[in-house]
Amino acid sequence: MHPDRTTTRFPVPVDAALRAAGWQPGRWDIKQAEIWADTLRDHTSPAGHRHSVFPAAVEAWAEFGGLRIAPTGTGRQVAPAGLHLDPLHGLHSARTLGDLGRALATEVSPLGEETDTGALLAIDAEGRVYTLDHTGDWYVGPDIDHALSTLVAGLEPVRLTTG
Image (tube, rainbow, N blue to C red):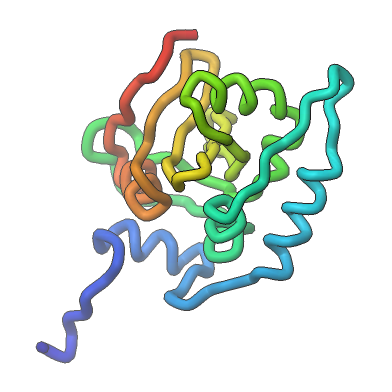
């Protein structure tokens, strides 16, 4: 392999945005992920709704939690999304996430938010990623890697519902 070329897990611009945010291969902050898990598990909405916490969410939080990703460039199809991967952005969305989970026949947990739009990012028990905003619910990818690539590269997500 040429010394200047490395194989990356993500497309080059996505890898660069992740690294600029502080991510690196092997990043794993399970202690912070467990704090978020406990905070979400302990929260009950005024109407009695509770959050689901499951391994796919905890793993995503451990590797990417806390990152503020600011992509550069124009995006391939839509504007690239700035992201703050902190599940507490969804703390008060237990009912919304529960409703989406029921519609998809799975559990859904918060992942973070799109900083420009305030859209909520969520992950399901199988690791699939969604964003929820005032226009509807969107499927962003089959796993966190695809979702980050879609959002940071400015690819159009797939609409699940209309708002």
